Structure formats: C-alpha cells, structure tokens
Image (cartoon, rainbow, N blue to C red; front, side, top):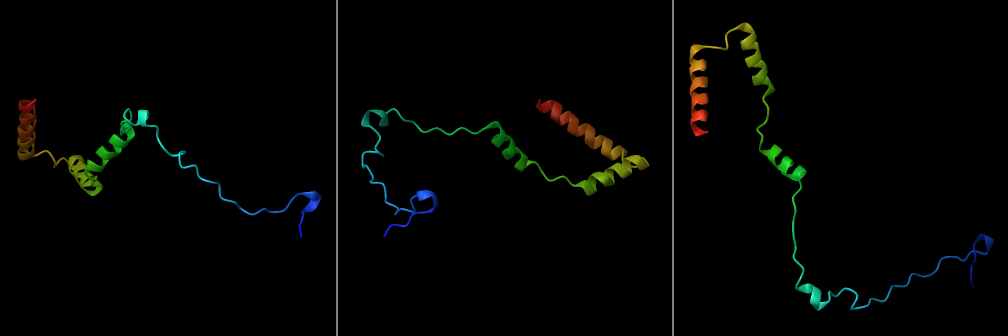
Length: 94
C-alpha cells in the first residue's frame, strides 16, 4: 500500500546509501610529488601569543604608586639613583 500526502505529493522514501567509487578519493600519481604542506600563522595569532607573555597588571600597585607620587613621597634619592643606573645600563646595551 502506498500512502500519499496532501496534494498527491509522495511520502517519505527509504534512505539508500550512495555507492562509493574507490577511485573517487585517490590522488593521481603525477600530482603526489608536487604537493607540499604549509602552515601559515596570521599576524593576529602572533599578537595573541605575545599577549600571553605580558605580565598581569597589578592595579593595586599602580594605585599605591600614584598615591605616593601625589603625596610627593615617591621620588627619593635612592629611587632616582636606581632609575639612573637602569637607564645607563639600557643605553650601554643599545
């Protein structure tokens, strides 16, 4: 018995697998030698990798130093000497 839907449209039909052609997935021999795999990393991916290396920002420390600067107690002779030494080291490496 055949069941037809409204408007004489056929009902569902059984699903039949598509026969696989064994040659369908083969790469011709002449092209195998010319193929080379390549990987390209985008600029965005490189940037994201660099971001992972950046140390975490310590907002509490930044606020503490800002408060010391505002209060006029951050710049001490010792800190100035350390800063000068670091600048001279960097200039010597350049």
